[in-house]
Length: 325
Image (cartoon, rainbow, N blue to C red; front, side, top):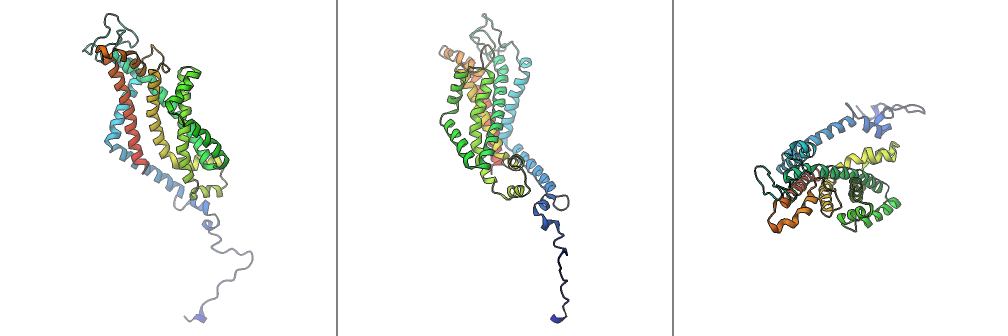
């Protein structure tokens, strides 16, 4: 067909809608992205997220370090829940006729200076240290994540003010800050939880802030703003799921620090108060007998602390290797 035989293009007059204008993807790109073809992009994102989680779990289950850490941690969780049932003796009842007995078939970990069964005290002692450390870490993670989201998303004056407070609190070691608070307020379970949680919150906030600063400039955040989503929705529904990896790693790392901090405070006499079985307090009460050859009273509580901290660190390192790539 010759050029002069080509048909004329249809005339477009005022009020006439073209096929392109009827395309919803061109009229509202953000809505089209959410709706998506054949089931929607949102559904595809959900499926993709599930596949990613399954892949993470598969990689973790192939990690020997993760398996070892989970097995050790589960053992101490079982002891924390069923310690009174597992313990062969009353952990707070002593006998002056059986004090300072070495490990034997009757007392697997021996007895202490008051005749109490060391094995029973180690088993039951897992409860308080696990409960306090987990609750304090969860509290610190929740508060720290919220602070970090606000810092990273709004930046400006909010970021500067909160950032200076965080820097001031991070100038001292965690144990020293917790020790000062506990001494000032008084030793109790609530004080330990609130103090450790507060200190961890400011540390976690810095990590979350760094992650949010990278996410806030991405296209999905801009699309949420175009949809007139609220700031709270953008922070907690859009950005938070995408920074969950660093938050999970921070949680496991801080959990190990919480266990160590609680044991240290108990050793110094500002943690869990006697006669409640506690690993740190038992070490403090028995290490003076090492010179006399009563090594078991100190060794087994110390091994309990070390095994729990190592287990949490193995899990945390495995998660970091898989999630943070």
